[in-house]
Amino acid sequence: RGQNFGYDGDQGPANWSKEYHTCIGKHQSPINIDEHNVTNVSLPPLKLIGIDNPHQSYVTNTGHTVTLKINESKAVMLSGGPLRDTYVFEQLHFHWGENDFEGSEDLINNHSFPMEMHAVFYKEDYNSFKEALNYSDGLAILACLYEVSSQPNPTYESIVKVLPEIEKKDMGKVLQEPLLLESIFVPDIAKMQDYFTYSGSLTTPPCLEVAKWIDFKDHQQLSHDQLAAFRDIRNWEGNKLTHNFRPVQPLEGREVLHNIP
Ligand code: SG4
Ligand code: ZN
Image (cartoon, rainbow, N blue to C red; front, top):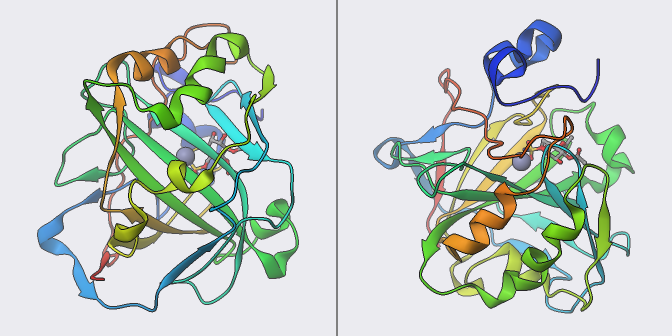
């Protein structure tokens, strides 16, 4: 029990609920966002602080994804928009597919993207990420979708370059240069108020329904080779982690909001 879930066969998403009963619920993620079925709203400004200066960053192969953490605590915070409180940056990670036509978790009008980034924040009042997992408003997760570009995205080169050095589970590496998170979190800061938001869950076991999702409408770009570098790392079983996305879950009457800047 514990970390031994996967994305294929017996260990795949269709069987997660056998071991993790909370993976069957009425507020599960990811979802398909149908742009013709969203409620347009005008929320207070979403505020991201601490992303305009570089942070020393640490990249790890967890056996399920690649995560990036910074070494200062409470240096990056999220508030405003659909959130009632302030949330502290915990880590960001990626989901991808085995080819350039799938890999994102949330879909837009049933369209998949080759990769999706999740920046996970926990509610400051709960003092720790672990504690926050016990509350329905415990997490806020920023999501960003990627498209394939012909040119490599220079912003991501420092991350892509260390992937071969963290090929196996639990390998980690400090990035050579401090990283400007602004350029990783949002494609264009001027467009960050244009997003979808809904209530959902973690997209991996135990699939806890504790997250407010905020999906930027704007996309980022990565080249085919940059995407392919992620597919080369190995999972917790030592096999290539060619894909790590959960299929979409039923909306069950939930409302998806579209914030119009
Ligand atoms: C990834 O497996 C992350 O590495 C996990 O983070 C994360 O779990 C999990 O995804 C689910 O998060 O944004 N996709 S998601 O819903 O954040 C948690 C760690 O294992 C609990 C640190
Ligand atoms: Zn995720």
